[in-house]
Image 1 (cartoon, protein in one colour):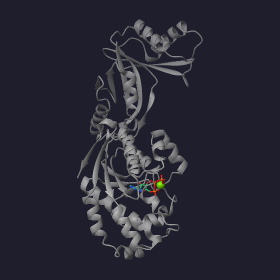
Image 2: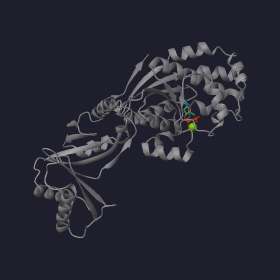
Image 3: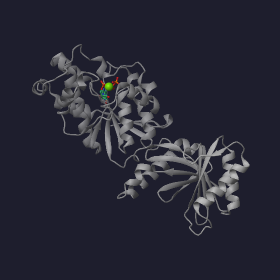
Image 4: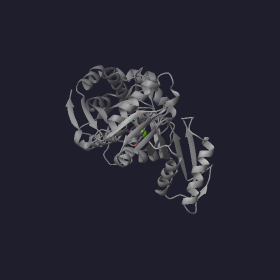
Length: 395
Ligand code: ATP
Ligand code: MG
């Protein structure tokens, strides 16, 4: 008898043209996630079977891997006799409390005597005889036991736990997440990773106006995202102080946020070019603040040609908060340290900015030089999903 974990792909299995690429990437991502554990993976008719004795640890880790629809654990037996199948199903069911059950038999070895239905009812009758106070419920059972009779073995497992869904990370290219210390951007990053996009992050830092604790907060958020992003998130830390100070000195106050965000976009697009990323991702949500009216977004977006993905743009704040709690970023996001946007917000920012004015104001400062300097002096932090593996790397 062998202990196994079964991985079902769900949506992934519809990608018939490049299924092998998706599966290879999923397997790589699983291997990275399970580093240090002892297991072996076998591809098996539209799913993977992992042979392991460390079932619980592996099930927990697999719940952080995108591209998995369902995770089941079960047993593989060499003895295919009906007597031992009955005994094995009974011992599996003896392990858990339930009041109704169903047996589903699948015969991939069609020469095995009996039909799937007759075998299921044989096994079911045996279970009813041996466990008191239970019933069969074929529509909505507490436990559904699957018995797969294969050529040389029998696979027996009961209902699984849901995986994260989505696509394996890296199957759909790379994106650059504008990661602030707020609640929205980590959630936006998570949702992009879910669709198979591998992310790097950019953080605009404004020392001494922002404290080092604000950067630490962003690092901690990146560490949570790293869990889902194949174990690592690179953060491009941009010193934004000079650009902000020049904007404040030279540009009318009510256009401050518009201009600041145009510069953030420009820098982000240039970083995308240097890391071969194809889109910017951010946590903008329609109507949340003045810079997130549709008109504002249009004027800010006009600064660049790179596509900008806004995964939470239609979410209510409460929906974003709920997701941030689920993925584990909320408690970090609500730490009190301010980031560069919040400290420079004017009382009455423009909510319907004019593109011509934005262009005119852009001529008041030598932004090209400032943007070039900011990118040249960036720091890249490699944030791993485990604290002890972190190291800093100066460009
Ligand atoms: P909150 O969750 O409080 O709304 P926020 O980080 O979303 O915080 P916003 O002012 O709404 O703050 O900014 C919109 C988006 O712009 C953010 O979701 C983030 O993607 C990006 N952004 C803002 N400030 C920064 C920053 N300092 N560095 C990187 N990206 C930033
Ligand atoms: Mg926001």
